[in-house]
Length: 146
Image 1 (cartoon, rainbow, N blue to C red):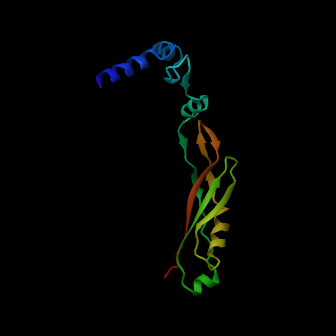
Image 2 (image 1 turned 60 degrees about the horizontal axis):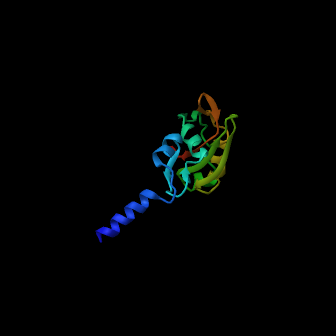
Image 3 (image 1 turned 135 degrees about the vertical axis):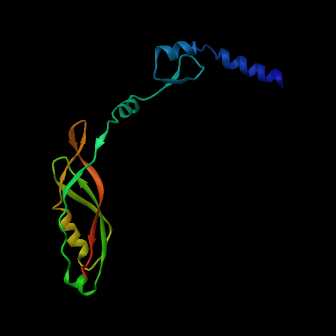
């Protein structure tokens, strides 16, 4: 059994014309591993390197004002309270867009929340000092005063 282990080790070392692994790794720092056959090796794609290098800090969107939504007569009569949750895109150009209603209340409150959300004033997210699009979850609270 030990002879077989020794034979395997010597096959791995010789590798059928394999180039010197340390030379390959030294000459190409992106080398992950060599295959042991000829001069073939696995190299990290450039796209992966680029994405790793571009992970600069992003300053999140800043909400400047969030108007209070209007209660509908139906919801008021039913004494309905709660929150509507919206997924929104805050554009680098200063425009807000509603992507979807994540959780609604019905009775016209979802539409009221949408109208209010579209009038939110905000400062766009920043990456490297430049405005960028970002998405966020926005909670619009509906609460009756007693």
